[in-house]
Figure 1 (cartoon, each protein chain N blue to C red):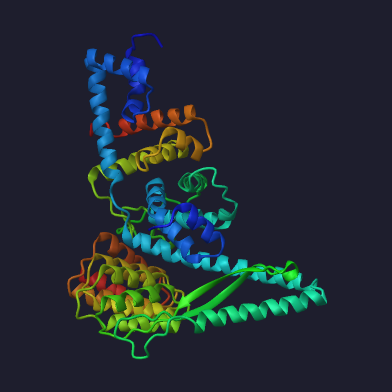
Figure 2 (tube, rainbow over the protein chains, first blue to last red):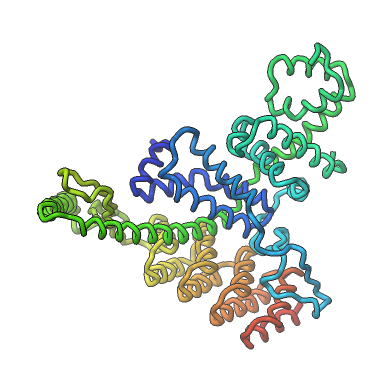
Length: 187
Length: 314
């Protein structure tokens, strides 16, 4: 029988590396998906993923079991996402016909749709939704993703984002309104 | 809110109605209003379609290749964090040891002896395995390592420590054996010794008669991109070149070509791309653009020359 989160945390805090790994692998797909949807870029998503779990590793000993581990984890994830600064400017463009304007590889914008190791967006709607998400503010986007992609209750999202339920409702209302505007041709 | 709901109130509540986060009274008022108002009913339908599409999008699975890469990079980062922690623990232990009294030293010597006896008990009292192990069986012998003291102070007669009990195993079997392949794939990702990682890749490489397993392919891709040892990266790249060319492998070759600091490995990648472009790898506009950039930026003449040749062919 699989160990509970609590048992894994206790074992991990005793130095059991496998318990830590099992705990991470239990949730890391969700964190990576959230980061991917939040940034729209696979490299940025990997950076966020790593930062989240390094923070988990460093502060696991201080976890008091006052909330679910997943709530605590997503609180860290939302903090890391919202404060994340992109490494590269996304405004450079390359043209095949313009040699003089060619930029070095490190400066190529990390447009996910173009990246060789991108996350393929499965549907046309998926691509449109991702694009529309970029019009939201960081807090609106995070509350929207936690609600629609991770399925958390407003109360839980408020706990994760450390704000009142009323504030989350405003973020959600505004994000849905903006998304409808962005996608109005589709609906 | 009165007993009736107006349009604006209703429209503001649509998302929360669909989230099922309205209290009972509001839900009833909302449903009554929608039943009698065509405009709001249409609005609700349009939200339902939007939410259904978002829900569909939310079910798209995480890219396994990206996940493998992220895990590999995280493992490296955690390893370096753990090393930092062990180093600081060692210093702490050393400082504590300076304050031990002679009696404490005697007790700690005795405790260490007990620990030794305990470890000896675990090692030699484990189930005896027949020397003639059958193929694909892993023995139960335990090896104790990485003892880490939580409470090294023996003055109260108690000490506490953690340790890893590692099962040593031996496996002999067909190179295509699934269990054997699984262990080797794990070793390629996790073994600290680059020589072992290299040997593991070589064995995996010998398994080319079989249809390539996705897990093995993804592991080779991650290693070709991120292993810190150039020899291991090169070997992984060679193994990938033996697999039937596909989009993932092409993208890996391009990634290596753009990012690897070793000219030898970039040459390996560009050669594989030249070969691949003749045998079915399809380069798109974006790939050609990156190769064009490479012609200008790579410090290696051969890489630049070959990139130019590929572009000429298209």
